[in-house]
Image (cartoon, rainbow, N blue to C red; front, side, top):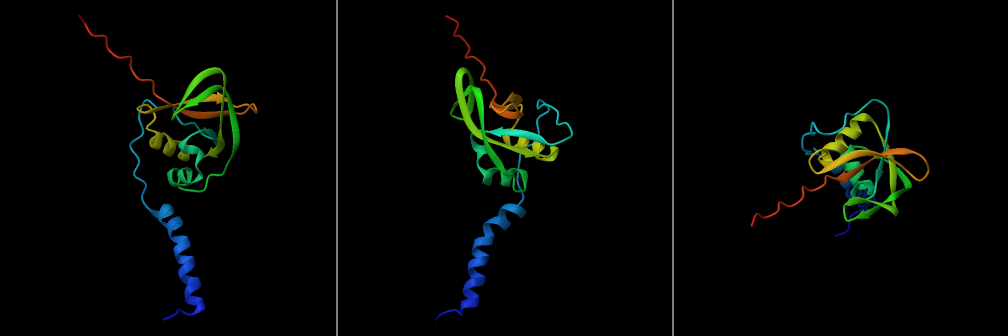
Length: 146
């Protein structure tokens, strides 16, 4: 049993469009925004992504719309896993993208700013300033009392 050519075409279009529709209209469950996060001011915000946020699908899912990015470099920092470590010789490759204040709030919630990550300003190699997320430093281990 074969389907007519038009039905095959409709089926292919539905199968290709389904992931976009699910990502666009599915509810995104993000944690509450921490009070420890820096305030979100008006205006567009540049963000430097070097790990998860460098992925356009993740940005689409978190922000709720397509957020194009362009290659960017952050000097003076090196990537170590999911974190950035200060390093005078370090260079971290990533992407820079622009979001509205509401998008920055959603990114803060996704990154659990104030709990897991902290958001701070950096100057990129091209001179632009951007927000970047960095792991919250772990507390030093307690010393055992003899």
